[in-house]
Length: 290
Image (cartoon, rainbow, N blue to C red; front, side, top):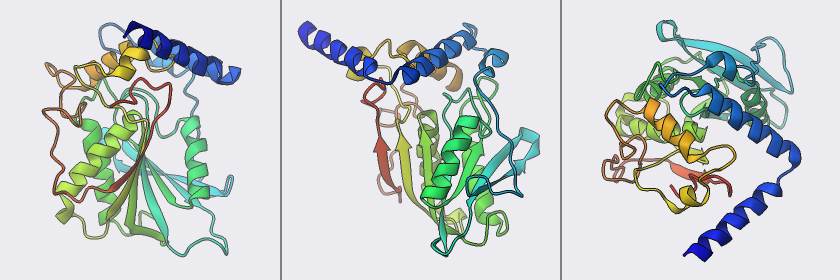
């Protein structure tokens, strides 16, 4: 057992060193800043975190890299909004484009739909798929715990269904894909479950797929990848434990249904029209076994 663990640890080290040096530096810097921004009392040093979270502004009147941006307010009282990415129409563009509802990462606590990194990614998605991309700017922890983020994602979906003019005319709301990375993939899963359970509320919107990128789930019992990658360069066990603590309701453990999607308290999705799902995992992700 020890020999096997040592072998796996060596493979992890080798995989880490095989990354490009710029990638290693970026991940290490981001990890250190995130660690420094996490306070022991469950609060966040937002000023410090914003050092690396560069923001981009929407430019609805201009095509930048063949994509236009606009920000749409859903509920000003809770500062809920989404950023809309619409690809430029060409002769080769399909007459009806699917809609991708994307929920960003950040451990429920950091980043936003205005983060520069997501601006780059969503533009590429909108252009390459092509698709109309809706990036939900949900409320963050620790000020807003579970289920605030799920509520925000579902409410944006409801707005897309009830308002015929919120999306461009060529957006096909009968082909909606959920997508998210890490914590965003967790949100995408639970919003998809809620949408399946309440499908009768929707007149037009129909979820048909889910893209889950390195999804953030967990549980009280450590899985093998968490043990093997305990000190991972970007998402360590200490970091994920802290994130669950500030996200889940007071008194809850990591077997809460929001965290452990296959545990004893998980929502039973048998019988639901849960969308077909494509899952991506990373070799250095300690959450890969969840």
